[in-house]
Picture 1 (cartoon, rainbow, N blue to C red):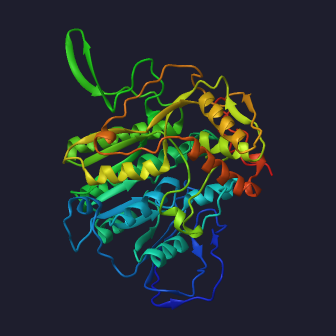
Picture 2 (cartoon, rainbow, N blue to C red):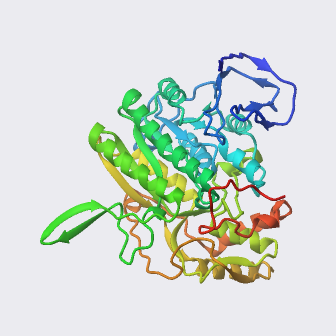
Picture 3 (cartoon, helix red, strand yellow):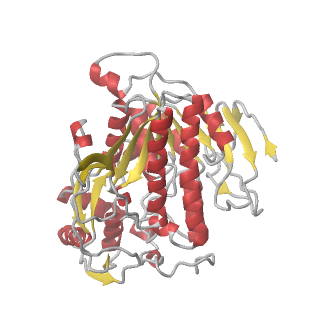
Length: 479
């Protein structure tokens, strides 16, 4: 069942943005009531029945269009050259935590940006009874606000990249020079809730990435894929972690091989499969790709998201989607003990979200060669969980917060004390200027958490997903 509509120069009476989804088991359609009084050239391309075994994915597509801007690209600004045709970047997953900040950053730097997203991350919140610490506007209102503030237009395609027909039309319509791929289920705990979430995670992530690779091959052979991977692909080996590849000598012979992978969840395994598929298509089809193995991201504000409340990014603090430092800052703000899993020696690479957007821009401005599969380890500092807890405790004391730490049983299957030393020089060599975790940044994060503490649901703080106890039976949330 397919429906096609076109609405031009339409007007709506003011009303809050609302997302609703059909109650029909096999059908899921995005419906939006627009807050602004006018919209120009809104095209609702299609609304399609979902596949029976994919109950979590919204299936609709739309493009929000307006006046085309012709600013300089980031590389053109640096070189002093001008062009009437900016480089085009498709940000897949551009409504999410990293994707939204990246889309605004690239638009602000002069790239012509299109967001591709099925908005399913918002549906996860409804399913699990979660909410962002920060109120977040609808994607349509976010884009309108950005254009009103800057004059820059971001195109929007709402649909599922696991639907190759939809993705094909988006690629043919936008013709990207680069595709930044954030469009995956990105939570390890979510992938470990139950069988259905594990299957969804692997299907969504692996098939979605395969479709992106085929779309590049069929419709945009010169397009540079910038794919968000994860440092979690490597695990915690008892040797230094290299950037993607390791040179070894075995029985008198030497070779450079992909670094061994030791994924620790069905989510991390999906990323490993992605990396293998991308590497293969670079070799077989000549695709150019950069795999950004990102560490744990913290922070919420970038220069662009701070411009207006409707541009605010999401800030997750719950046990499913919240990252360690963000969770600790919220816990400190509401007087909840910091939840250290097990012994707290788990060490990972971390980076500020402002560095996430900077790294993506650097990868785009310095693309891989045809047939080249590059791997950059994307983080700026290493911390153990205990070290983060001590930093938050000290920062909280300066603000008059009495912060306590509590060790809780570790819901994950992981080493709690281990060696960890990961290399991360390639992005620095390209010009990354990192925002390191400072007292002032921690103060800012804590103050931000205090500002919105009335929105905190303390029932969501403790971990509720167990690696060992997950089963085949679908798990629902108790209210």
